[in-house]
Length: 266
Image 1 (cartoon, helix red, strand yellow):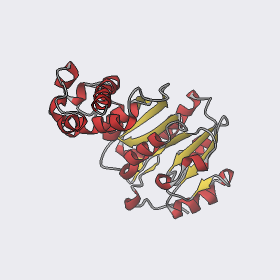
Image 2 (cartoon, rainbow, N blue to C red; image 1 turned 90 degrees about the horizontal axis):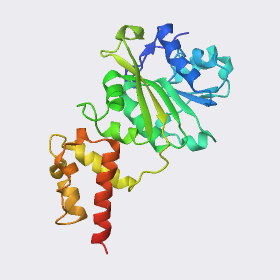
Image 3 (cartoon, rainbow, N blue to C red; image 1 turned 135 degrees about the horizontal axis):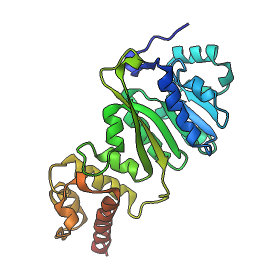
Image 4 (cartoon, helix red, strand yellow; image 1 turned 135 degrees about the vertical axis):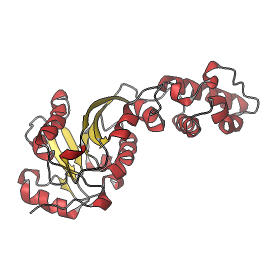
């Protein structure tokens, strides 16, 4: 029995065992991890290398019923740890009591959604190792000053240290995608809580990058007016563009708006 990759699920199965081993070996650097959840294992190309490691317990979650049947048939060691569900619609805190690492060759069509789901459960997910479309991998891992640096970069880097590990060619997949892939690692940093209002921070980041060619004084104009009329934007941060600001500078920007908002409501 084999599984036919399904286009509507964004399935591209890995066939190069050297690449699979290289990705799985990242887990050797994190002996503190005791539980791994692989998303979209397909026919288990990565799974078998995870199962070969004994310092953590491997679980898999797969939406494709044909793949689930294949996994049950070919991976008896996974009995009781194969979930035929949609990761995006699961409450991770109810599935697992403690911390877990998220792992996988992620379907390209939902990879960004997976990362935002991880962000929602950041205090339970200290580690992510995954394969993404190269453009997405670069966007997530790039720092200030890059044209690829954007909303998802800042929001994730606020809570994770992110490392671009290596690039993967198209020809190691069935079927080959039309783009290269990139493997990245996200490791939870020490930030328990942002030094600013979390919701306002998110709005500032989104507003800033939605008009990234403008200076922040202009791209944040409607948000600034909402906070307080006559807000002083002479601070150097407001003269810059979004892509030049670090995560910490976005926090500082949010703090300024937050303080002004508090004083205007007195």
